[in-house]
Amino acid sequence: MSLLRDEPGAEQVEDILKGGEPVVVPFIAMMELRYRLVRDEPSEHVDLLLETLLASGVEVPESTPEWGRRAAEVKAVGGLSLADAWIAALALIRDAELVHKDPEFDRVAGMRAIKLVG
Image 1 (spheres, rainbow, N blue to C red):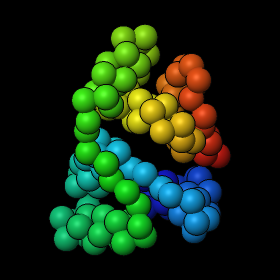
Image 2 (spheres, rainbow, N blue to C red):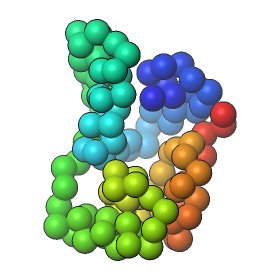
Image 3 (cartoon, rainbow, N blue to C red):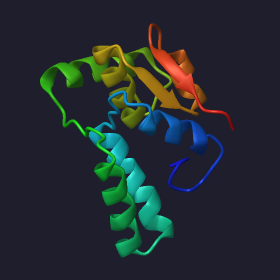
């Protein structure tokens, strides 16, 4: 959202996308992104924005049983929405850095993160 709406942290996200490291956007984060954009943008604009994001080479993994189990464990600890539990669980499974600006993710033990400025 930061990049697509040119919000604070957009430059950090742009640098990450251009940095050459793999970028993963979980299926549930793509769904959240779409519904937030649909509320404010014409549908053809939303499609173009998301196509541009996908063209940058991001991976959008779908659920697996292991991921579902891990998301349930994260959710059981408390403090995260259902979607955020899925997002955090994938970061933990892949030992990836989660790029975010949501303070709820700070509660997830053992997760590496890059907190966006703003």
